[in-house]
Length: 97
Image (cartoon, rainbow, N blue to C red; front, side):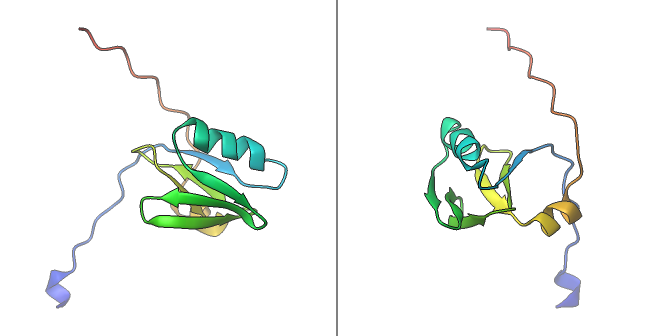
């Protein structure tokens, strides 16, 4: 069984995040829905439809927009352990017809 373990490293991909707070819930909601995501306000924060189903984002959680445009919540301690600040990616150049 031990020989079946495969070790991998996450690729360095820049993703967008927003922190969910009571005063930012409208801005976060607009960001998600404006990009085609689905979420609903709740007393605890936001219910976000993710690739794995609906997840609750609580106050203080970070909302991540993944590489395929999907949204999902991330606890602050996990964000701190897994991600680091980065510059926004350069816009893609238009493709020739």
